[in-house]
Structures are given as C-alpha cells and as structure tokens.
Image (tube, rainbow, N blue to C red):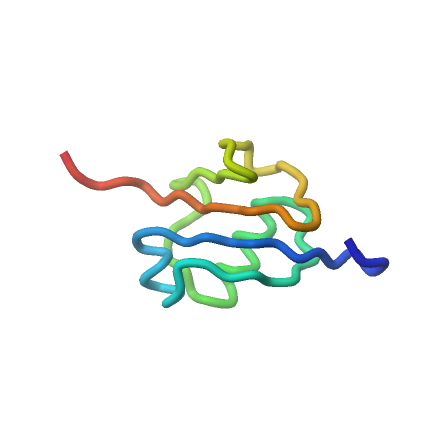
Length: 85
C-alpha cells in the first residue's frame, strides 16, 4: 500500500457483472478500505445494477464478509446470484 492509502488489487467479474463491465478481470488502484467500499466504487463507475446485498465476495480464494479489509495485491471476486435449476 502506498503512503496515501492507495493499493493495487485484482478484480474478477462473472455473469452479469462481466457483461456490464465488458471485462472478465482487471487490475486497478483503489483507496477502498473494504470489499463493500470497492464494490460501491465500481458500481458507481460502471453502472452495475446488482445491489451488494444480492451478492457474495471472495478475497484471495475464500468467501469473506463484505467488511473484510483489502490489502495490496488482493484478488477480489464479486459473485452474483446464480440462476438455473
């Protein structure tokens, strides 16, 4: 993490989020302290339509609560609801 609190993270998108973002993954710099803050930041930037409450988050290959703190180099996967039967 840099002195100004900025960190580089790796984000992966699936299903609806991938379609809305137009990418399956990206590396970005953020000041977001938590996974929830990062999602809301990206939602505002890219117009994601899914509310946070309908999704789950994986950080470094493990499901985490939305208030998990983010660190330099983390990999974050936003998991939208799965449709099907």
